[in-house]
Amino acid sequence: MPPKPPGSAYPSWLPALLGCLTAVGPAATDMYLPAFPAVEASFGTAPGTAQITLAAWFAGLAVGQIAQGTLSDRFGRRRPLVIGMAVFALASAGCALAPSLLLLSVFRAVAAVGASAGTVIPRAVVRDLATGHQAAVLMSRLLLVMGVAPILAPSVGGAVLLVAHWRVIFWILAACGALACLVVWRVLPDTLPPERRLRLSAIEQVRRYALIVRDRVFFTHALMGGFVSFGLFAYIAGSSPVFIAGFGLSPSHYALIFGLCAIGLVAGSQVNARLLPRFGLSRLLRIPAGLYLLATTVLTGLAFAGVHVLAAVVAPLWVALLAMGFLNPNSAVGALARHGTHAGSASALLGMWQFAMGAVSGLAVGAFTDGTPRGMAAVMLAGAAGCVIADLCRPRP
Image (cartoon, rainbow, N blue to C red):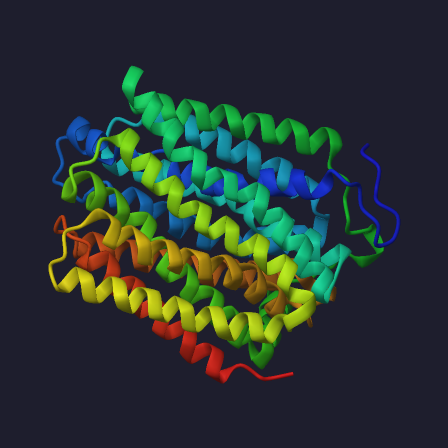
């Protein structure tokens, strides 16, 4: 059995491990984005239909959040992670063998249910170990490791497409899931001791969720996080058609642009960790929310003005993702701050809302895909506006 960290202390390598587990979801989301045209050609479907598989992935992540939160509060953090990574590995293998777009979407949804363990449980582990500024700093360190995934994953996917079929991408993901399962089983300490685990009936769990949602602090911070995800997933779903179909980039060049924008997300999370002690959580939610709205307003204005210049699209996208790098960890810490006794359930509700918004966002972008940035930009602007409104409703310290 792996050792448990004493008290609030934790091994120095734990943030890196949690970051890698959290990165499984983004890697599985982003690695096959350059393959969208190849997937559509393989199944003989119309342009934009591959985004259905992405919406199914986000829907599976949303559904999986609730189950993972409940399981991690009842059985500890480690066991549900092992099972979740195993499900992800097996379902990813199913994606590699899928004979139709429908079955690919089904296997993607099942894989997402497993991968959701890597989304919910590391956040709950952070809440087990730290609160306040310390938790936000730890969350930002976790995001530093996680942030490598959206930078590298599309490049890996693009490189695979140069030498192999798109199905190989899913075999790689299946191998990553199996490795994650093994590592969790062998070395991850369980940060939730047996005496703190909750054994609730279904009705009691529903009541607990209702109690969490009625907390205005949780609700408004979760709303902010959800609208950030709405914009982020609009970018993820819309970027491949915009850059590959609209600007005519190759999958490898698209991967470079995607990685460049992801650097903005990572940079925001790391600068956030340094600024938190000086400016506080509340200010580092309010200011980035305004920056998010400004950047997406500029992007939407340029898109509807018909400006077809790559740099003019990438620059406001980069700024929007920079703002999201602040908003993602800070909204999560704010939402979980008052729910230490049931961090898994609160984290599950937060994640469910974020990925439900992602599923809606992906479908919306798919409906408006026309080879221009207009659909992606408009959906991102809607997310930014919702984030600012939620911030205005948030209780001030």
